[in-house]
Amino acid sequence: MKSIVIEFEKRVSEVELYHDFISTVIDKKPLLNFGKEALNEKIDKDIYPILKANMFLLLYNLVESSFKEALHHLSEQINNSNLKYKDSIPEVRKLWIECEKRYFEKNPNNVKKLEYFYSIIENIKEENLSVPSSLKGANMSGNLDSKKVKDCMKRYGITLNTEKGKKLVIVKNKRNNLAHGNVSFRECGRDLVTSELKEIKKDVIDFMRTVIALFQEKCKAKYFYKNSM
Image 1: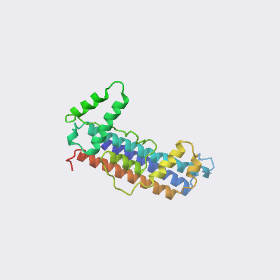
Image 2: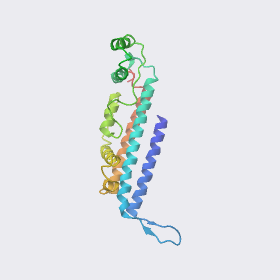
Image 3: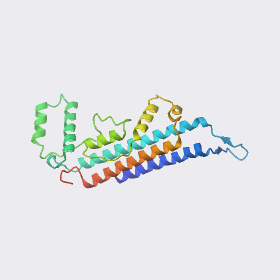
Image 4: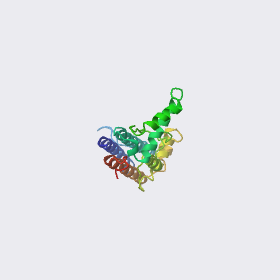
């Protein structure tokens, strides 16, 4: 998880750097200077909402990349632990069954259903469990808000209790509207003030720090063993 935390903080610094830049441009209204002999020029105010709209792309990139990496790390840890069915928590067992079911659905002509599930039952005591690093039907790409994050973590047996992240749904919706061309960048950022953008940024970053810290805690404790608590 250490590398994930480092990468997360790098992306946070990008967000903070960009936010400081647009706050300076919008609130302090600096002049552009193109050389000693050139006149100072004002920055066109029409670019302000475009700059603000870009913040949603940076924030959502931070959220989705970090969450997917944390989930992948967790699944790799489970899959490399030689975890047996009898030793695992119910959520991991269900994810393993989902993997086995998915394999059969992908190969219906190559595997006889009865024989396939018979072998699973016969070998269940010795089988090392494996879980997916992405959840079928979770549809995470472009759709992560605090509820979706909590739901995904719950399926892995991790309960996230926090009031943070309420503004992530705003980021998700703004980002998707931009990505799908439903609104222009100018329309997206037109009614936002920099103080509101700062609140959104803080809430999303605080939420993701809480998420990653919980992943770290659970991975260290190897919570997926039913007697780990």
